[in-house]
Length: 324
Image 1 (tube, rainbow, N blue to C red):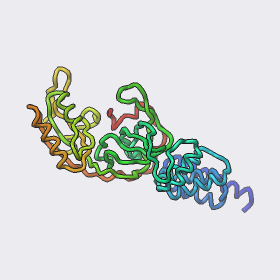
Image 2 (cartoon, rainbow, N blue to C red):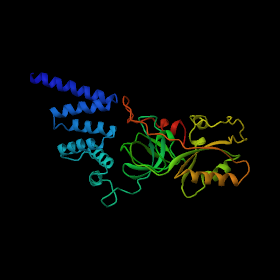
Image 3 (cartoon, one colour):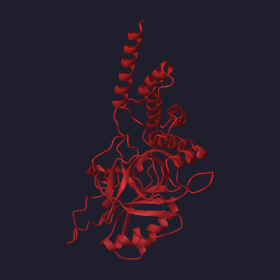
Image 4 (cartoon, rainbow, N blue to C red):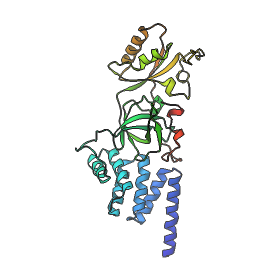
């Protein structure tokens, strides 16, 4: 084969690799970039792209290897390579490498040798962005790790206080509850530590917002957080989805209050949930508990064929078609 024919062949293969990646077909894209690297082992951009494909596949060892190879070949600092290497190292729990790359990026992190534990601010995290993409509030504890502060919907397979690995580049902005500021929205890439707080769904009735406030603000041992899903999740009737018999509440107060409420509770066990609800119900007339569900769901598997890592418009950054 002539030099010209070889060049044309490589150009066609590279175009195919980029096209495959652009369609969100990450596994074949990673394979194609691997074929290209076998023929051009010192091509920085090919190692970068293979590392990127493995990042979105959650394959941290391969991602770190190719990002570090790109860094070595580059010879000078390039922020995107360092960030992706740090993300992959964090996914692996290679704290020495992660800390090295964050410092190269000029990010101030606490001294030490293990996991980074600091406060990098509030963020909105899109869970399972390849499958629906519920967004929840979270507190960032390092540049790409965050602890979930909402009770996620059971279908997400996540739990209150899970620690997730998120991408480095935000995909949008979201207003905080007070509306005074916006925070970045990041795609979750992996779960690094699963919380002991399981998700329970309670269906209750009460006559006023004050009744419900008492429940959502209550604290007990074993209870992490209580959230009014009727307000924060509006895209379907949770009672119907879990098969709890009821008539849809058509009676509202003059202020528009609906007495039927679906409540998400992050708790260590059902006994704590029962104690919480029994105590709340006993303290005022008109309060009722219609049922407690303990739904179990696995996290949705990663799907391919769409570029979920690309940013969305700000008006799409609302939790499960609602507001939380």
